[in-house]
Amino acid sequence: MSQEKLAVSLQQDLLTLLVHSDEHGRIVSKTIDAALFEGDYRNIAEKALDFWKQHSKAPKQHIADLLSNILEDDHDRRGQTYRRILIQMLEVKDQINVDFVLRSMDQFTGVQKFKAITLQGAELVDARGIFGFEEAKAIWREFLRDQNSSVDIGIRLNEYDRVLEYFRNVHQEFKTGIKEFDEANIVPMRGKLWLFLAPAKRGKTWALVQLGKMAFLQRKKVCHITLEIEAEEVAQRYYEALFGASKRDDINKISTFKYDRKGALDQIVAQSVEVPFTFNSSAVREELQTRIGHFGMRSDNFVIKRFPMSSLTLDQLEAYLESLELLEKFVPDLVILDYPKIMKLNQKELRTSLGQLMEGLRGLAQRRNFALAAAHQGNRSSADADIVRATHASEDWSVVCTADFLVTYSQTSAEKRLGLARLYVEMARSEQDQFGVLVTQSYKTGQFVLESTRLSDSYARIMEAMPTDPTEDADDE
Image (cartoon, rainbow, N blue to C red; front, side):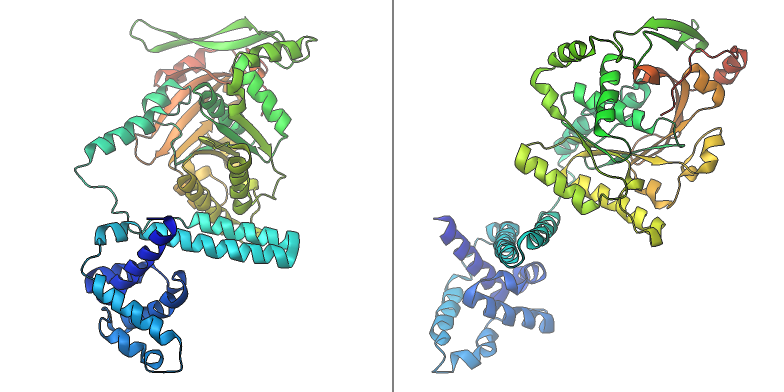
């Protein structure tokens, strides 16, 4: 059977269920709009749906009464066609493959809507040119956003293989490069929002670069959206993160951990390391060409895109991702957004607008099946807080409630001088949370984390014994 004949047959079968089946017609009546039917089928569907609204059952033989004004009018040419359709429905009503028809209902709905918006888009472009083109794209985005199945039964309790496979994939697909987080599954996951909360100028971008670097090394496709700094600056940070390069100095001082015989943190000591190359070197181009060349075609797996601050909307972000897919065949596994608070918001209702944006971003990740990582800035009190908590989030509280993972960043002035920071898992929707990790860092060479260990009671004692002289002048973000 050709696709065209199959579409006509499916349309007739759905109409037959709507008209003659109390059981299955109920599903059709709550799923399909009469406008999706074509030609003479549409008028019959309208009458049947009206009957369902009034009586909550199929019209059956009463369908002829509902169409009597046409069937009994000898001058109405539609009468003969309607009689033929009604007779055909009576003949096939007990022969329909109900399971196939209901499972195909989403496809029918999608195809019919596709036809309608294609025609509508063409009319808009024809009538309004480039202005109509923008409206047509908005219609397309809404269509793609609404592609949710209403007849998919979901998952059954005995489908444990499917459940186990899901958790194997979701826990192993992405890594943070922080051993304690990776072991506890505090990692980016598809359809989920991994949110990093930190005071101003305290490493938000570097944290996101760390996630992007790790995903790239795992052969994932990464799209990094920046609204605060230029794309070239972000690219340089990735060069530093990937290769340990420095902007200027060829010697770098870092802190490193020493452990006692029981494996507990015992000391934090300073050491100097030589960086592989610097960006003020005359041979920096050759260094980058050689090192990036080792990745081969994998280098194409990374896209950095800059949008002006306070201009990017959720629709524009989705349109950009669609263009990447359609024009470049690039479908990201991980989208990094730096950062949502400086997207375009309703300034008169900033809190509500930001909360709705975060929900929309998480929904976008679910629809397009990518992992989403973003940052959020802490309020003024977070800068002096001993431990940054969710309550230090600026603006709407729902921002942190929307996140699936919330990791906070805390750092005293002494820790900053020593290249240390504390990361705290404030919230994890389906994993263990409320634990801290101590990391050593070197922003000078693009390293958000060099070493990591679980925070313990001994840390305060160790810090008290540390010399006040800095090991390095840690760069701000």
